[in-house]
Amino acid sequence: MERFVISGWKNLRGTVKISGSKNAALPILAASLLCAGQCTIKDVPNLQDISTICDVLTSLGGVIRRNGTTVTVDAGHVYLAEVEEELTRQMRASNLVLGALVGRFHQAKISRPGGCNIGSRPMDLHLKGLRALGVQVNERFGFITAHTDRLAGVEMHLDLPSVGATENIMMAA
Image 1 (cartoon, rainbow, N blue to C red):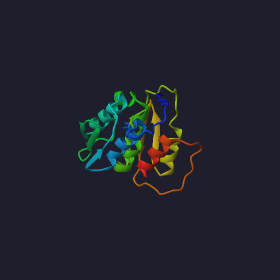
Image 2 (image 1 turned 180 degrees about the vertical axis):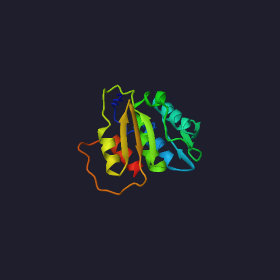
Image 3 (image 1 turned 90 degrees about the vertical axis):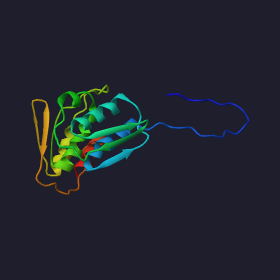
Image 4 (image 1 turned 60 degrees about the vertical axis):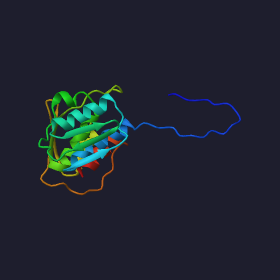
C-alpha cells in the first residue's frame, strides 16, 4: 500500500481521485443480470477480473459497453442460465452469477469457480443459503446446477461470515 508523508506547516487543500473497487464492482456487475434492461455502473476499475465477469455476462447474451470507467450492461437479451466452464474457472467471483441467474430465471449451471490466489474457498455457505430459499442444488462432476419452481422467503443465519455467500443469496432472493 502506498502512502504519502507530508511534513510542513501549511494546511493541505485539494482533492484526491479514488478508483473504484473491484470487490464492489464484481457483485454489482453480476447483479445486472437481474434486470431485463440496461444498468450503468460508474467508477469500474479496468482489471482482468472485471473483463472476465464482463465476458461471462456476454456469454450469457448480455451486451457490454465500456467507456472509460463506466460500464453499461444490457441484460435484456440474456437467454442462457449456463456459464461456460472455461470462464467460470478463470475467476472465483464468477460464482456470483449463480445467485443472479437463480433469482431471474430460477435455474443456473456453473462449474466450480477457480482463479483464487488465496487458496481453496468452499461454496458450502452459498449452496446452503440457496437450499434454504427452496432451490434444489446438485453438485456433480465439478458442476453446480440449481433449479427451483418457486423461491421461499426465509430467515437464515450463516454458520460463518461470508460476503460472497451473502451476495449470492441476496441476488437469488
